[in-house]
Image (cartoon, rainbow, N blue to C red; front, side, top):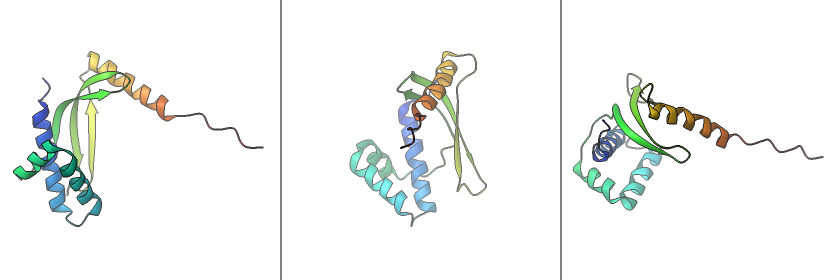
Length: 121
């Protein structure tokens, strides 16, 4: 079962708050938070709650423009100090979500690769 969106939103906001505590002088991080506070009422509410935690795993639906909604499991891998994060998304084997996920990978590659222009003569 996919966790509800409110849970995911709260987890991501609390993880971002954790990052700002770890890297208080990072101007890009500060700019991101400022932008989110100004443009997203839900984020502002979550930020005001002051929750701090690490967002390690989740189950969510990703809406891909070419294949539609895909339910994925997200696992966050970190180094010992959690300065580096890698998010791994997988779909349950043998499901329609796995088929959509694989199709999204192919669709993404095709969209990203454009033929090289002919050399000027």
